[in-house]
Length: 290
Image (cartoon, rainbow, N blue to C red; front, side, top):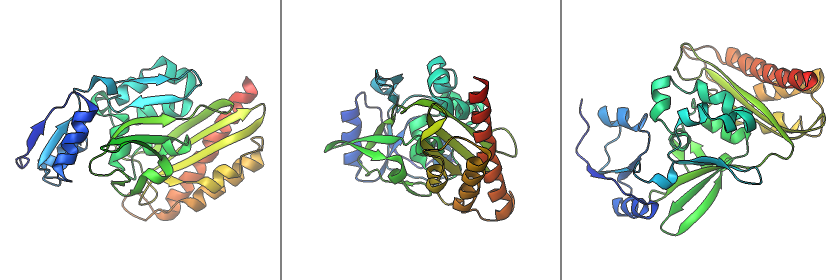
């Protein structure tokens, strides 16, 4: 099947792209990596009147740390850029752990971090890391820029808080309040598959105490889940068998899985608890070894 006819535009600035989206009046779609949009076009699940290709906007092609430790990821930063980044590996363990698990190598060469977050797939990887890291999205529209906390950005399956004439130009991850530790695990039936269940953990640690915690779950609900009670149970505490077990229990309780061909709801909750426990024990063991 071929896509339906559409007007193709290739702006060179963010302002031009915003103007085109505004002109499209809700009938325009952005193209960045295209790893989700292009298949939808071919199957006519999406039939926009206009396609706005932002790949010519070079100012959006970056990932960098500010002097205060804030991480900024531009809208044209590819999954592969993060996977191969030495500075991400050194400074941002949760993102570093997730990057090689996104889809497959072919997709990672073209797909973008921000585009994946905006796709808002409940089984996606990056939304979980963003929630765990207390990230936010910078959107630009005709009225200027605004920042949207990740926990408020995804409204439901494939739905975000972006207006039809706004572009998500950047993802922002705040500087850690201590030493950043964390990780990401997902259960997939084969390489490149969507997650049956996934868990992102991001902690800021000072000494032996957790001063900030984020735990997010993918694949076990109609949206990416912020397991805030599980994270809160860790704050102000050292990682011990008891605190780890409590966080795992609360994370499983936060999951909203459905039984399907990938497994029963109880099985998916068990996976969530197992993954949270595994990640926290790995962090605990690595800190003890250090």
